[in-house]
Amino acid sequence: MQTQGQLIEAKQQFAERGLHSLVDAVKQGDRQAYQTLYQQYLGQVYALCYRLTADRALAEDVTQEVFIQLWRKLDNYRGDSKFSTWLHSVTSNVCVSYMRKQRGWWHRMFNLEDSAAMYESAEASAAEVDLDSYVRRLPQRARMVFVLHAIEGYRHEEIAQMLDMAVGSSKAQFHRAKQLLSEWMGYE
Image 1: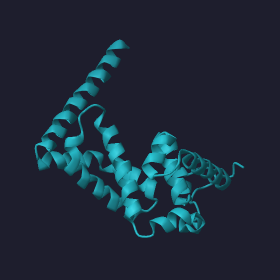
Image 2: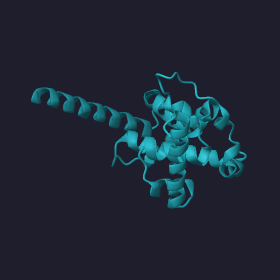
Image 3: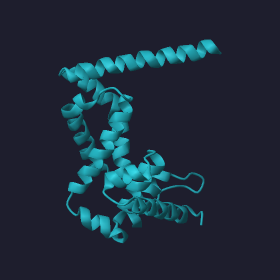
């Protein structure tokens, strides 16, 4: 059993060295290395953007913005943490910033009851619950807090800073999201 664990550990170390070499090549301006990095992380970045925006077109736009920022700011990655962790943080911050810049940001933030997504039906059979379809129905602010806290693991203090809100507001929005999800899923 110890041999299998050593093999897995060696495989992870080899992958990390390869990733560090790839990142270093991108930092030196290697466009082919950037393309490889893009292909490797496109799915993860898009998934997070889609969870936060609940809109495919907006998620695609934000994903492209993340990779533009990645090209411009990769020198800021020092290697103190895993690259995927750093990219995850960049993605969350770019997504939140991008959404703020969108027309009607304040209207969507403060007129939560008029969210069109709230009236969509969640497409799921009785036997299979698609949590993502329910999460997309949440009001934007509650959805963002829910995704960042419950799915992505951010603390409320971090979310409050990212979304420019009080920690108590983050907790309240998370509680609201949980209540709505419970109601919609029939767990009252």
